[in-house]
Image 1 (tube, rainbow, N blue to C red):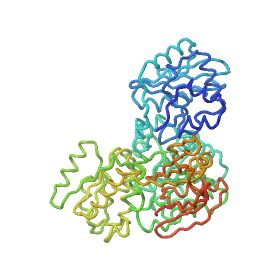
Image 2: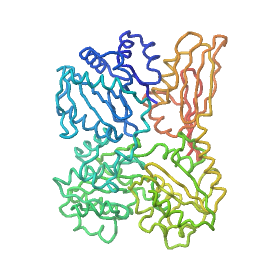
Image 3: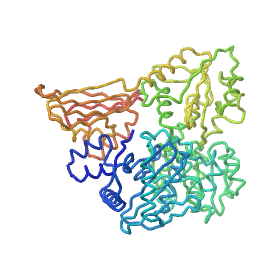
Image 4: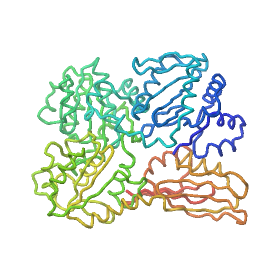
Length: 606
């Protein structure tokens, strides 16, 4: 939970220039405002002659959860929101663009929203008008009255949970009207990739990303922009959905990858761009033909890909990413940040696929039900459907497979039809074919499409809630139930280390600033009683100063993480040396020294 500030108190402490005092005051927050923003804030308070009461209850540099959009000053009450943006100097067009962004996100909280931007160079204020979508200049008295008005309201100290991704993150397939009407925004990273791809001079541009990274929205957004000036073709490497059909009716040229038309060279005549979504599923011979035809006809290819998201085992051997990268002058970007994913759901999926993965969240939006063979599962699903749930069955094949009997409950959807789509509340069924072996969830029996991969695909389509129905499989029910129980007891693992002299700043820089562990407490006074603690996953890591200890005994600290690749990148960026790095069949880990020369071992289970 972010810290709330009194703006005048913040400036008073900041003006001391005592780094230790400032760090103690801001606690677990990183530096809330940049230097120029501090000057902007000082100017604003002096100009408006604000009192302490009106300056209470503000978040500084608040980041909207899931997307990282930053808001300078934010105050939230039971029925209203005040946002103040600080600018040293800025053009009106840029002020308006930022205010539109902020209003888009803040309006999802269903409260009255007031957005004001202060331009220090002009000593002027601009207020966002929701009706006209314009930024209008307002006088100092009105701004002062508005801030005083909020000073008399009770503010809310925890707001992260109010921001639901489903309210502001759209899918071009499930929210097609909003997509076509431009009622969404890309993140700063997506905008940067979009600009780079449009300006790229080469033939091939690749966007790699796991489910939830927003790669499909980015691809279709680029296509929408280029469609205005160029002749484009979109190839979707799965079955077309209702969203595709709506776009086709609006004169979008979208086709499902199929040999009946892929090998006809006439289909590519006059095209400037070919967009390929989910190209990891493109049959290699067909994919190679499209690439070679594009190169021959000077057609640019822009594609999304996720090699780990296969549904048939043979798709895992397509090696389409390597095929793309083998060409010269390509643009390649891998998106690591999961902006679309609900972090609770992502953690749950990891935790049930591999029981060694430790839950990072309390699974408050996950439920599990058990039904026997004799229970009327069909009427149970119908009842849930009437309450807003969507049942996602696996894709049937010609083979006689146990889960086929449960596919009839929703004949409109299956795993292949939902690729790229999202649903608020998702139901999946696990029958007696699923079981754990050495902690790994798998399907044990004959199959055509890999049930474990289809389960992963279905679960990652959920925006808000998941319900797992287990039929006639008590062992599986017990193990998944244990995962839910374990999540409710998270943070129970505590590692404490006592040392004779503690350097809080060095430990904070290493564990929080570099590795990204959450700073829980940072007590720098008095000498002899300093302490600092961090949290990662369900592990609390604490260091305590005790004067009666003669020396620091080095030890090995083992911490389970879920993002080792990201941590290795952070370590590499700081030019830090790894003592050891290994990857086996079941886990991978790195070892390095922390500032106390402890051996820190970061482990991720595969």
